[in-house]
Length: 359
Image (cartoon, rainbow, N blue to C red; front, side):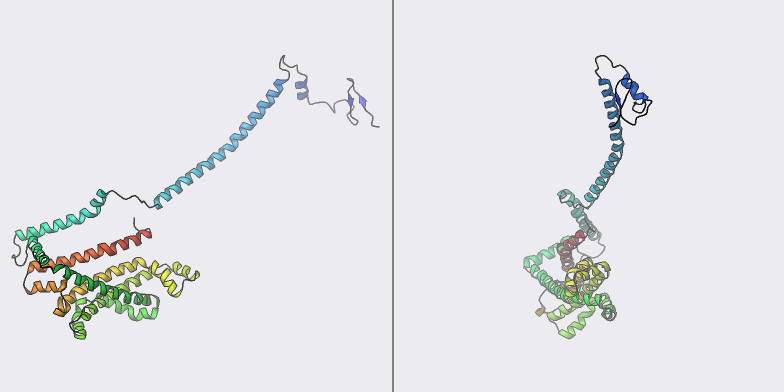
C-alpha cells in the first residue's frame, strides 16, 4: 500500500512530495492572499470582485482592439457604396420630362428668332430698295403669291406630287444602296473596284444626269426616278461603308463565336453595330434624292409628268413672277426641313441615346 506522511498540521501529504513540506505549498503571493484576513461582512466577495474587474478590463481591451479594424472596414465599405451609388446615378436615365417652358426656350425659341431675323433683314432690304421690286419682292408679296396658289386649290397637290416621288425614289435607292454598301464594305476586291466610283458619283452634281436621262427615257417618270437613284444610291452605300468601317473587330469576332454568320451576322451584328453611320448615310441620301428630284422636275417639264415643286419653280421663272419663284423655293426648303425633323432626327436621337452618346 502507498505510504503517506503526516505533517505538523495533521493533514496527509501525497507520496513523493518533498520532505521539507514545500512541494505542496502555494506560491508566496497566493498564500499571503489566502491567509490575509477578510474584511468583516464581505464574506469573500472582495476576491470575486477583483477577478470580475480584471475580466471586464480584459474583455473591454479586447473589444476595443477588435473594434478599430472593424470600424475601418465599415468606413471603406461605406465609401465604396457611396462611389457605386454615384456611378449608378450617372448611368441612370432620367425619366422625368423637363418643363414645357424649358423645352420651348431651348428648342423652339432659337429657330423662331432666326426666322424673324431673316424676315426682318429681308424686309429692310426691300424697304431700302436694294433691288427693284420685281427682282426683290417683300415677304408679304411672297405670302400673297402662295395664298393665291392655295385659293386655286393646287398647292397641296403640287407638294404631294413631289413628296411622293421623292419618297418612292428614296425607298428604291435604299433597297439598292444597302446591299451594295454591304458588298463594298465586306468584299475587298469589290471595294477596290467600285469604291472610288461610288465616291465619284456622290460628288457629281445630280443635274448633270438630267440631259442623259431625258435622252435615255424621254420625258417620263423614269427620267425623274433615274436621276433620283443616281443621286441617292452612292450616298446611302458610302454611309453604310463608313459605318461598317467603324465597327470594332471584337464585335465581329463575338458574333462569329455565338454563330451569327452570313445573313444572321448581317442582321444581328453588322447592321446594328453600323447603325449610326448608316443613319447618317440615309440622311445624306435623302438630301441628295430631294435635290436630284428638284433638278429633274425643273428641267424635265411636260404635261404628262404632272406639276411638282420643280415645275412650279419653272412656271414662276417663265412668267417672271419673282414672288412665285421665292414662294416655291420656300416650299422646297420647308418640305426638306420637315422630313428631317419628323423622320430622321427622332430616329437618330433614339439610336444615339441607346448607345449612351446622347441624353
